[in-house]
Image (cartoon, rainbow, N blue to C red):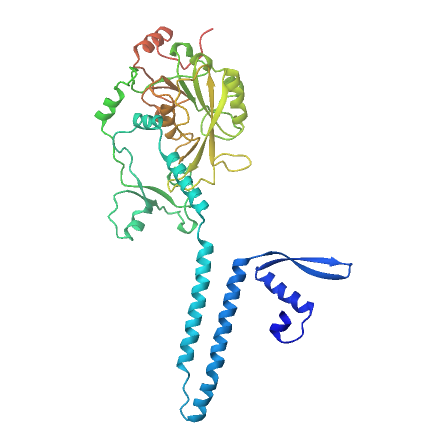
Length: 453
């Protein structure tokens, strides 16, 4: 058939070359077979019928176009011989060729569109997938109830502008009401070095040459009368939400049995991580001997750890009677929401995160589980100042229960929490039962010194 088409003798080599071209164009799939270890032949394994049919139609269209040109060729020669001075292109032939080309392109486009169209099965699968996604995205009745329970009343937070500084924001010619930053430029600042990772929390701002930032404009202060009203309100389960309470004490010597029982404990101990720190630390044995078991029968503990304290913290949880059930990671950022890469701690790598171990003790059936994520992304502030988001997570986990924070400072005091630490100011108690028990044990109110033996 090939010899007849070409009008000349052919051989196997010509056929093999033709099949190889088809394989290159992904029209057929070939396999080479050895016969008698000398003679080889090509075997066609599979054929793309749709593509081959399209190629055949294209070849036929080219053949018909060539025939049309050959039929009109004598007329063209005759016209050229009659008028040799005014030679003009055959317009009719050009139109015919253009039409044939358009038809060929249209047929090729139709074939490609048919190949790209989804099948009925694919359409049904897509429809089922969309229905499943729609069902998964709808909140359950429990989720709606919890969301309504913890819904905040009014906007208490002001959003930062994505442009950063007010100058960059004004380039967009917008009336922006969000918060902006402004650069802190001092005599020793070198703006070509870029931003300091700690922005306005840098310990060495008096000598650091990097650029620091501060908020451009004072934040809105919350009405004090509203704060007092919120501190004294009652929860739905008749548990009184007391205002913040605190006791200045040395936790190594405090008799914790006078405080009663708590549903949640949070501690940020001054671990001895074998580094120079701007505060005093406690030895490993002092941490193991803390009276934390007396504070809780049923509930959870949140224990902040870092560096070598991660292993020691797990050991302490076990000694105090807790089972570690989860872990929260705080990813540290600066005010531009960029990750801190020059951490203040770390012997091998710069630490840009901290861990908070979560342990349980006794029955914890009353907790609202699976509400929050185990990752907090928040800004770095003063040394050992943990993110405020942790208090919201704990309140959603155990709403309306007694909570206590160990090794706290003035910025840690929270409504419905009792804060213990040697840096808080004096003693402030509101709970009548707690006041009576504390006065009975410490008549002079001093719990900073070790007990008299």
